[in-house]
Image 1 (tube, one colour):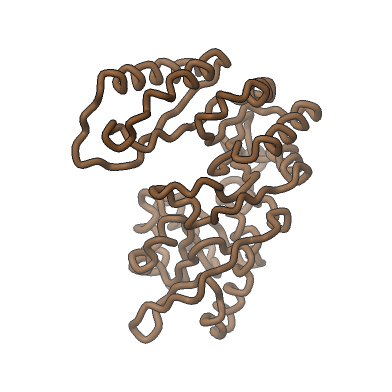
Image 2: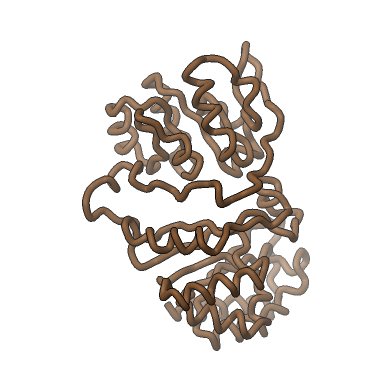
Length: 316
């Protein structure tokens, strides 16, 4: 959404809901370009738009790792971060010149897939404008609102886990927006958002000092909507951080267990003490286990932990 906000011109250019009805309606508005992040039926919708003669480009982690696959559904793929190159890309589309000079761009040329050099990471996240949700069809009407407003406060993760896509997409260097820019977006989210905010950083608490400063300021300014975020389980070992999270109205945290197979992650039960701490703070926990395994052999302690975690989710 942020690159699309940057690239918005007089012609309608939007990141659209992944539904064929929305796409058909969009086609009749005669946009210059359509953008998709692949999810569920997104690839089919992209095909529908291309059939109408509208250039389609796709961005995001999935296509960054698998651009050749994505080019089956789109005309162009933007690998990595496109914030600093999106305007040049749109100009190249308009003029038909300079596509080979756009970093991070993948496209077909003379029947062959061409991958331009990797795009650099955005050095100053404060230069990225807040997403303009008004360009999403349906939200331009008076009173239209998002159920949850997504807000980015940082990119990157210092841990570089071998199974994770984050560092390949956003790098290992942890970059974050200033408190002022985040607070500005919190103030503005009420226009299109309800009471909920999702801080969609890959690791919201990677820099604890910075996170504490942000939460302190949110409390001080009384900008405390119900919010959720992705964190690592060690946040539970920091009582001050936990207190600030609760006082600033954190409702749910998303924690990755990485594997449900004890042969892959032998110490999964070590999360139990932290899980208890989170329970005492009255936070709901959502667990996800993204690593596929050839065989699933649960230990009794792991089953006990997952049942315990499921009970924690009932707090909401």
